[in-house]
Image 1: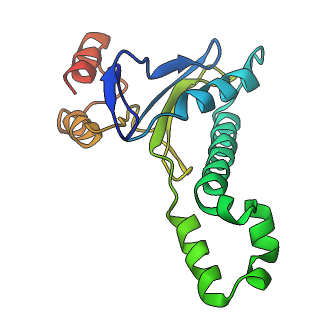
Image 2: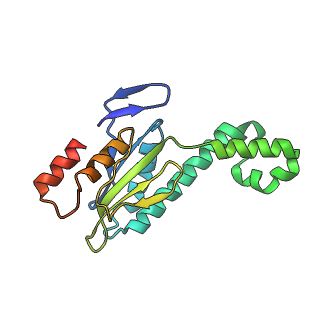
Image 3: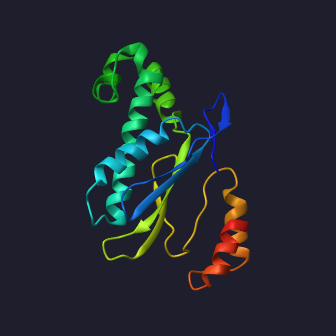
Amino acid sequence: DMRFDLGYTSGEGMPKMGRLNRYWAAMFAGSDVSNAPRILANVSEAVDGVPDVGRRQLEKLFQDEHRAALTQHIEASVLSPYGLTVGEFTKTGIKRFPPDVFADIRLSMERVALGYEFLVFGFDEKRRPHIFRVHSNGLADDCSLLGFWAIGSGDSAAVHHMLFHEYNTSLPLRTAAYYACAS
């Protein structure tokens, strides 16, 4: 899948997957993936040369990068007319603005969302397999017990297909690959 979407236009030809290091890789999907490659590159740079990266460490890196991108987006789209950062608004906003204006700005900040999510997969420092999803709100779900997950516009159908066929990690490779491709 190399279809990308920038919210106002879309096209083919953008790889939506990247290696983080020797043992980990990630994919991304969403309605506006314009910042996703930067987050992927930043996480990759943070783990470059680190031989033993665990799932929790990667989850935290993705969440930290997500938080930074969200903060930047809020400052650009909501707070820039006031010349404020999120930190400044949090500290002084209630004093600077009438209560109704403060509430409106706060609601606008809460409505800002990044339009993409990640599916991260690989092997931890003990070479155990892991797969986790980082939602567009920055929360992470460990999907390792299931052994699969999907993201993007077809995620529900793909997950349903895998569950319907009772996919599990002990299936023969040929069968598992077929179910994954069919999904």
